[in-house]
Amino acid sequence: MRVRVATTALGITAALLALPACSTGNTADQRPSAAPTGTPSGRAQETAVLSSAALESRLLDRSDLGSGYLPKPERPAQYDDVTVLGCPALSKLGDDAAMGGTLTFPRKASVDFTYGGSSSEISEELYSDSPKKLSDGIGRIYDAMTGCPAYQVLAGGAPIDIASQKLPTPHGRGDEQWSQLLTFSVNGRSTVVKQTAVRDGSLLLIVSGSPGLVDHHLDKALTKATTTS
Image 1 (cartoon, rainbow, N blue to C red):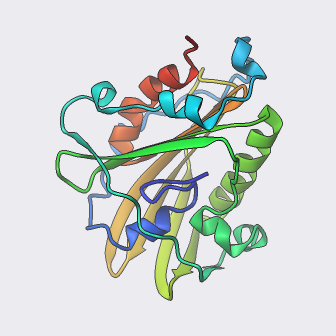
Image 2: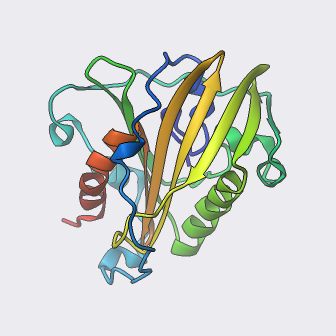
């Protein structure tokens, strides 16, 4: 899983080292919701595994997002030397989990956008595999991250303070849902990233970025990702 605001599901930290400061006051956009229903979708794609090319065609593009969105340049290379401090559960998965190296599903596609020429960003990732593999892979990372309200990552020798907060999951979407709010503090600057994941059968959608943008585009991303032609 990538988390492209640094995205590779926990790769947020690498790109954040280069991000300008942005507001941490967007949490008002988050609306509490009921617990996930866990009801199977019943669609044909419930068990069908999609190719990377098929996933690519289901990603959001600029025409889906509207005006003001621009593709983000290729993300910076990940750091080889990553150390997690203060979160034994995450460390147990391997230090590279904090930089996105744990979800290595071969069938995947992703896209990143900036908005309005500012530091606001939104990223989308799609993965396809058996429902159990997708659920186990993302679930163990989210459990580890949200189980540690505060920890630190040393990436390339640079310390990054991270605060995590588990959020109510988006009700009625897919078969399983996960959502968290992460606050990254680097050199006195703070950046807030919301990450929401939805598994629908053999497809896993992850939308990450500025909280307001994630909330605004999540349903659109899920609809396009799960629509069969």
